[in-house]
Amino acid sequence: MVDRLMARAPNTNLRRNGETPAQRRESGKGRDAVSDPAIALFTNWQQAQRVSLVLCRLQQRLETRVLGAAPLEVMDEKAGYLIAYQAEVEAMTTALKLQDELPQTPARSLLGVVAKLEIIAGADRDIDDPTDFPWPHIASVLDDLKEITGSLPLQRPDRLAIDADCRRYRAMAADLVDLQTQSENLDLSLRPAVGINAE
Image (cartoon, rainbow, N blue to C red; front, side, top):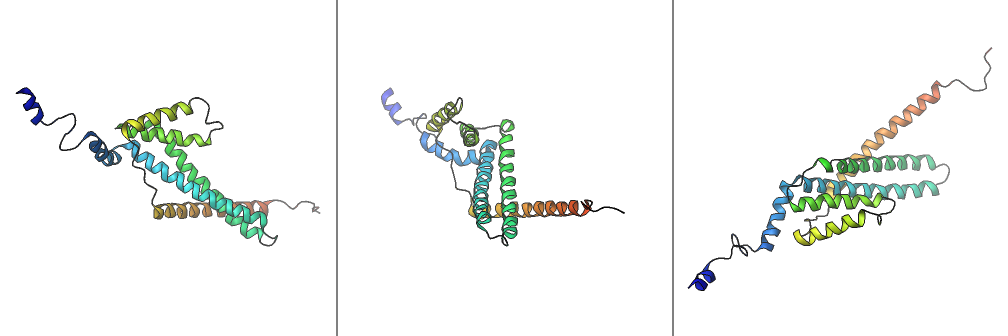
């Protein structure tokens, strides 16, 4: 009798609201991504990293042009390079500021913890030797958590958003380079002439 009742009763360990644990985990990912500040921080950091990479590649292409330019073309090429370089610095600064927010950003789920560790592990690319303690250990913990919770719903950053951010950073950089150039020109015009004897 008890066996028949148990067979008819829904197994709450396996199903709740008609979902298996794996289905609940998958459906929860979308909710976690919306409500977990750590996942939101990771998403913003991932986009800032992507923008920085795009601008780095642009800066490298322009640097190659400057090095290969004829003497008369160097000034025009150099201005474009300086803007691209400054834009990359601005984008990287944004990514670093997001990394600095990590300790104050709470994780509200295990996926939020995964997101925080993804930022930490992703930032280790800038470290001299990512094989030293604690980096392999953090990567191991991250792998264990992903095995338990599943991976973050990674989405490639929207191309339009990346392009918009790149344009914004280049505009900021152009303004900074222009101000720097104006300042240097002003300094040159205010310097006393060297080698002229006053009578």
